[in-house]
Image 1 (cartoon, rainbow over the protein chains, first blue to last red):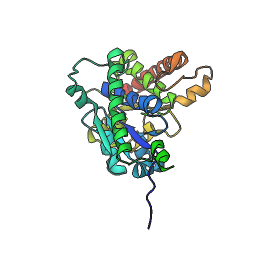
Image 2: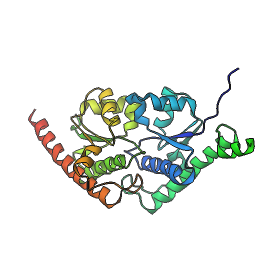
Image 3: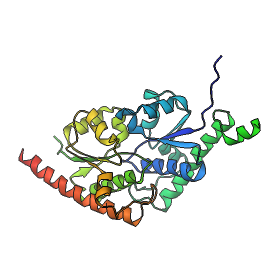
Image 4: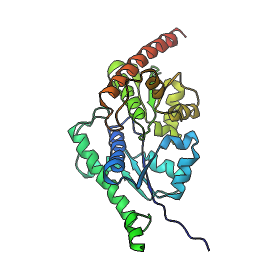
Length: 150
Length: 137
């Protein structure tokens, strides 16, 4: 009998999104989650490394849950993960979220200001919700689970 | 037939400050220094082998700016059908200008901004040379 070891990390894959303001929000939101909201358990994956042939990124995404954070409906992060590594555990489409939140302001891709950072924080919280759901569903071996085991 | 452009494509790394520098230098070039001649595109579209993005690469001039030695931008451009006309690594500029060290991924700091300015000015000059050569063809 083989026992499946639960992953300790969740991969968060941002679309690159250099062309669109939502891409900048995606990248910065992922970074905020890594640095500020869920440090230690969040690993960022570099999407273009999939095609550049980095087996480490692909293998990680096969073994650990991955949340794809896309700036737009093209869903490059989600589709690339599914193409190279398998199904994602969660996906965010920032453009759809902005519509849902009633945001139709002009946003900057190159110089994020107060509004862009406010939206980045909100998107970061959406990512956090998905990570916390994975923890609650027992998909991740996290510190709280180890403490319970002791 | 639409006029050929120069696509400046940075890597999309979010793990290193050098990638942030590459992206900001790209925006400086395409939005402020050469807005009529240059543009950018999402590197992820090339990763996904998007036919429209691949065509843009094949039909236009391309500059790849990579944040690290993995050269994702250059390799994804090559996979789309041709090598970039110009390819640089931010790390090479950092080696040449050791006093300009970007602070962090989200905030590259003053030294990082100076590095962005230096790279973008050099790039704009290189693109101008490229375009002059291209026009003679």
